[in-house]
Image (cartoon, rainbow, N blue to C red; front, side, top):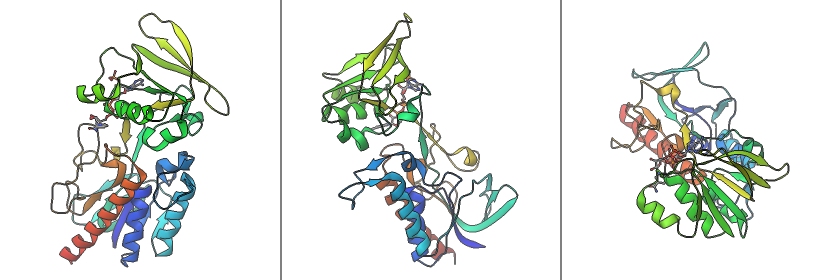
Length: 304
Ligand code: NDP
C-alpha cells in the first residue's frame, strides 16, 4: 500500500510530486503515455516566473519531472485504465495491474478543443489556444479569435492590447459570452458573424485563414498572423464519471470540505486544469499541485 498515487503529469502533477517526495511520502506518478500535458505542445513559455529569458514548454516539463524524481518520486508513463475510489483504499489499474494507495491526486488536465482544419500543425507557429500566454508574440500583427464564449472575449481583450488588429469569428449570430464581457471586449473589434474557419494556409507559419459563411456558403481568405482558438476545453475526467462529482462541463468539483483541494470523496484530491476552467495557466496549475500536496499531508496526518 502506497501513501499517494498522482494521476496525470502536467505542472500540477509534477509539483504535487515534488512536494510529496520532499515530505518523504514516495509518491507514484502515473504520468500517462503522453506525459507532460499541454506544455509539451507549446514552444516558448515567457510567463512562467523564474525564467527571465523564457523556456521551451517541453524543457520546463522535463525539468519538473527531473526535480520530482530527484527527491524520490516514482514516475511511470502509463495510462490509467480503471479506478475504484469508493472504499478507504483507493484502487487504480493500468490494464491488469492494480495499484493501491491511501490517497489519490487527480491532475489529468484538460485539452483545448480543436477545429480540426489543419491548425494543429501550426500550433506555436501562428495558431494558439491561449492569448494570455501568447499575445506578446503578436505585437503589431493581425490576429483572429474563434469562438463566442467568455474565453473568446478574454482572448480578444488580451490581444487588443498588443495586436495591430483583432477580429472575432463566430459561427452564430448571438454570442454565448456574458453581456458585460462582450461590452468590454468588442469595441473596435470586427466580428465576422455566422462564419466558420474551414482551413488554414501556411507551412512554416500561419499566413491566411479560410472562412465560410454558414448561411450563404460563400468562402473567403483572410490574411492572418495569429489564429486563437477559444472554442472550449475538454477536461480529462471520463475515467472518474460516476465516482467523483463533476460540474456540468465535466470539470472535477473540489472545495466543499475543509481541505480545499479535496473532491467529493475523502482521500481523493484534484489539482490543475482538470479542476480549473477559469485561469488555465501553468503557474496556477503548479500552485494547485502544491496546495493538493499540502492538503494530502494534512489528510494523512489525520488518518494515521
Ligand atoms: P464555452 O463552451 O462557453 O464557449 C465555446 C464557444 O465556442 C461557443 O461560442 C461555441 O459556439 C464555440 N464553438 C464550440 N465548438 C466550435 C466549433 N467546432 N467551431 C466554432 N465554434 C465553436 O467555452 P469557454 O471556454 O468560453 O467558457 C467555458 C466556461 O468558463 C463558461 O462557463 C464560461 O462562462 C467560463 N469562463 C468564465 C470566465 C470569467 O468569468 N472571467 C472567463 C472564461 C471562461 P456556440 O455558441 O455556437 O455553441
